[in-house]
Length: 150
Image 1 (cartoon, rainbow, N blue to C red):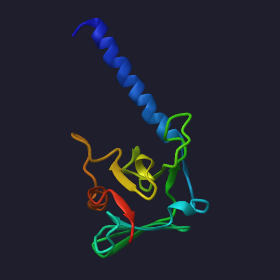
Image 2 (image 1 turned 135 degrees about the horizontal axis):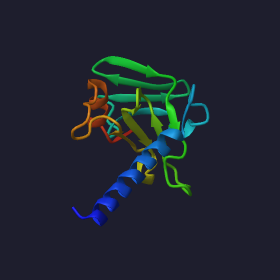
Image 3 (image 1 turned 180 degrees about the vertical axis):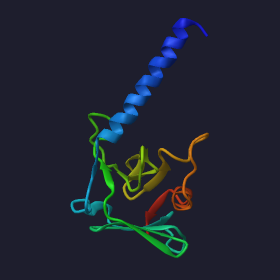
């Protein structure tokens, strides 16, 4: 590999690392979801509440229902500045579960600027060559995209 190409690859990797750090630096823990009323409701895969997993979003936080078990998260992290610096859209990003060095999954409400669509994607787990997602997080990712129950 030429010196010039190696320098470009390294510069790209440094930029990506900086972006990752920047995202984590702008996530703030919230003790409840007061003020996020527009995302409240029960979500299921495709909006079909006969399917699991389901996610209940209310002022107290997120309740994940998978295989008849509930996992309540009351201190998620809100990634207020996850989008571009001049972002003015309707998407809202949350990290419900923290890892020692990052976050396992990312919840995007109003995904792709579509009101009511919730996408759950792997963040710092579940990628090729990386640590596996927990059974709970894998189920949540596999059920995506979600919509409010009909």
